[in-house]
Length: 87
Length: 196
Image (tube, rainbow over all chains, first blue to last red; front, top):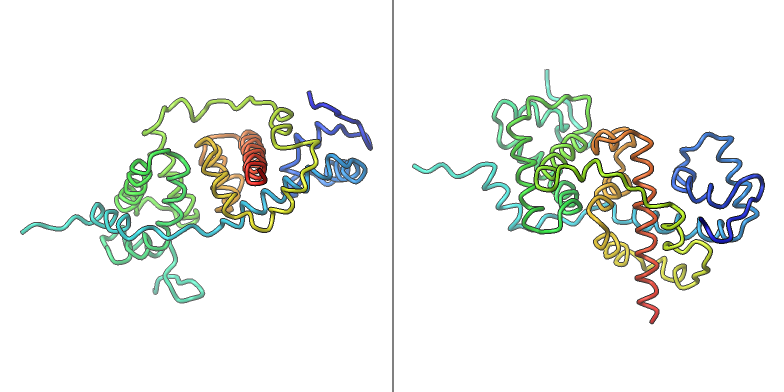
């Protein structure tokens, strides 16, 4: 159970927490999303946590571009794909 | 008829794989160059040992080279490669873990991630957080790293990600949410350690 779970605007904090990813991703039906937004607008805890959680996801997405593969790794990959033909 | 090209004039993945299916090594090399960094990152997300990740990278492209003719142009080549990597990883790891249910309570994860606790230090660190995020991601269990890599880093669609992990769409979403909460908890832990 979530300590301090409160029912605000007809929605429990625990319900917001359960659906937070879908809410932030915009994947909830509009009526559900509106209900959660109503709760978050009046609940400091959920608003703060939602902001932090959203920031964590946004920060994760800053890693969008992977580091280049090291030359040695790329070289071994090519060697396995196209082994040199021995005369 | 000429092969389809991208805006920059480069051949599309489907065109490259079509040529590779006919034994064109040069075309496949371009394909490898285009995708190797993403595949390697996904491989590293799935296994702990660097040697295993490199082996997965090699197995993935070897399978892609040998099965290039099986690629259906309507699919995303990236998702196709990830599927191959995933299957190879499953063979490396315990097969049964793939279907293991993550039944950790969201409330519990939320508390670990800081629900109900004010944390100005986290907000202050937000702008300089890239290194912390990378470290936090690295510290997560392999299943979490894999799903975060696929959905949040690579932007693979929910449907494709669900298929990739052999999950229903709701199960994939649930796993993603729990992985994000664990990441948030790890970031908070890292932020606290840095503030000490």
